[in-house]
Amino acid sequence: MFRNFRMVSYVVFGRGSFNQLDDILSKQRKDDGSIVVFCVDDVHKDKPLKNRLPLKSRDLLLWVNVDVEPKTSYVDQLTKRVKDEAKSLPAGVIGIGGGSTMDISKAVSLMLTNPGSSADYQGWDLIRNPAVYHAGIPTLSGTGAEASRTAILTGPQKKLGLNSDYTVFDQIVLDPELIQGIPTEQWFYTGMDCYIHCIESLTGTYLNAFSKAYGEKSLDLCREVFLKGGPGSEDKLMMASYCGGMSIAYSQVGVAHALSYGLSFVLGLRHGIGNSIAFDYLEEFYPEGVYEFRKMLEKHKIDLPRKITAGLDEEQMNRMIDVALILEPLWENALGKDWKKIMTRDRIAELYRKM
Image 1 (cartoon, rainbow, N blue to C red):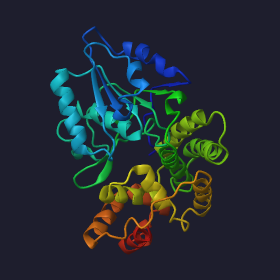
Image 2 (spheres, one colour):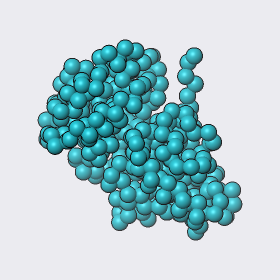
Image 3 (cartoon, one colour):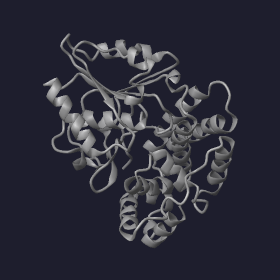
Image 4 (tube, rainbow, N blue to C red):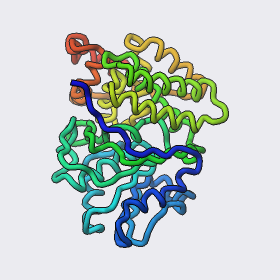
């Protein structure tokens, strides 16, 4: 049985395309009383983007904090606020920010129509009811969240996405102007998320012509951005992120992402940094990718955090391993159907201790 997965319904790309958002949302507003919820990364609170938001009188603006990885409790809190203030289902939920902000907006749009806590839906295809209309507008590029069918959240027991066809955005607006002026480290680590998941997709056992086509293009664009640079880098990175997200939609990521989930859950590391730290110790699995990754580190003068697991006790290490092992599709993509014979708890612990 071949996967029949949903893709983003509408895509706008180009410098200045953010200015079309009002026109796009007008088609969702059924009357003057329609409410649109804007989930915007609070880093933009005192920046020019705030004054460009096409807010109407009854719209709800949520300044979303993503200083830490998104938690199910935070999504539940935001969902309750929307229900309390909007009184009825909004016409749409719009996520504006990096991957974490877009994941939060996806999760809120789902939880407005599905009962219980978002923690109840961490896994594959557990969502039962379609989300309200939701659109994503990245102001960082690399995670592929704009194209993916998951909203990655940290819950009480695990870090795992709300993976479903209903999670996919109905609309995305890709405006390269929005990612200009990002601090170098943030730009680098977010971009490395894209680079790493392309390496994992292209070397995985799930690889097929569909994911290969998108993955190879994304990888080429990443190389242009992080090894060559020059004019048009924002445009290239934005398309690399989208294509990378499409690549893993029909395949999977691998060892670095699985280990990164454990690092994030126990140590609170941001996703891009966690991927980068893990990837640097995976020459055994991705020798060419790690070699090239280190060239990128050197070119952009990035110092990876070291010895981050040195102070962990046995309980913390076991929790980290448990979180990593939950992600069975990632391990199978990386190592094949017999992955459990290769990647034992002791082997994972050995990799974590190197970090």
